[in-house]
Length: 441
Ligand code: HSE
Image 1 (spheres, rainbow, N blue to C red):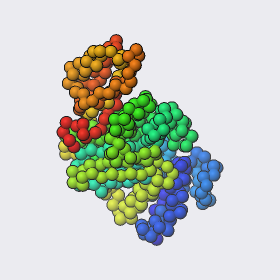
Image 2 (tube, rainbow, N blue to C red):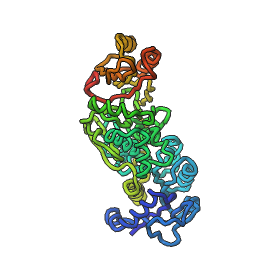
Image 3 (cartoon, protein in one colour):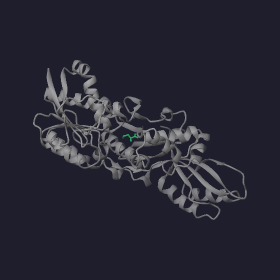
Image 4 (cartoon, rainbow, N blue to C red):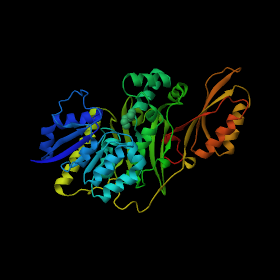
């Protein structure tokens, strides 16, 4: 039986899962593939820690470049994460004629152009199923299974940490800080959770999804990002009363000659399937013009789900190597680039629905002033609820708007903040509810 030889760089959680999968499911993989996926070397800065798996003698090294330079290795798996030295490992491996598998969304979202071009120059495959959605095969799905489709939109819950926190806030009434600390205790959030809770991790993934779907280069400058750190549990409760859950939604939407790519807390109707995606789970709701609506659900992180994605890339590359067809599938889904290129729509030009919470004095005429400010900017109100009746103090007034342009909402929020009857800046959360859209989708 032929053997595909693999060098694994990074024996952390996912790396250990990959090594385990290759050992535990060796027979199954050989039956299915007709060749063997064999670990030829494993590099990590710590080669003494017990990972709970029996790694054959002589495989471990602290010298990652030794694997990159090894002429006997066919595929390098990069699971170091971050920008450097991961980028150097990948570029050098491609230069040395190796194919690459990586889970590194941050690197591909920020330096993807250079890395994908290098893969093309050297005629090597660079697969990254594990970079987005963990065990959910969304990259392959968008690039291959749904190749016949124009994507109307892709809505994703792409960050398990945030989804866990938001679920806790919704179900238990926890504050953001309480929910984050619970996520950290359970190992769902890192000790420095910034990348997750500020929405950056989800934005990295969305940059890749947007690229695959619409043929635009991955570009973090085109992706609007707002995390969940400023979310008040009061708004999660009010949203629930209005029939919504708050989700950190990642949205890629076709707008003709432009594409919207944005990550932010979003009110999603409780009866939507995406609203039922709770805890650490991820999901993608994809609408194609040919296939119609599809939903993909699963674990977006974790040792074995992510390893499942890495090993599927190894299998694909192994098949390509043995059939002499490396580069058969364009890495970002488009062989020639899109013949109708799109630009990223600036957030100010986005048109959607909004939830506004204003802290206002319970006095005659206050609502009229607020409505006036909105009306002057063409923002129409769908509903208003005053949450409380204390005429002495400020009370929360919650509004839902018809579709409005973001720039107008921003300007209205500034003007409302400066009213003497209003305390602080209004809270703004975007809403994704087809019942509120002017033209139903
Ligand atoms: N930290 C991510 C999450 C998983 O919480 O979903 C890795 O991308």
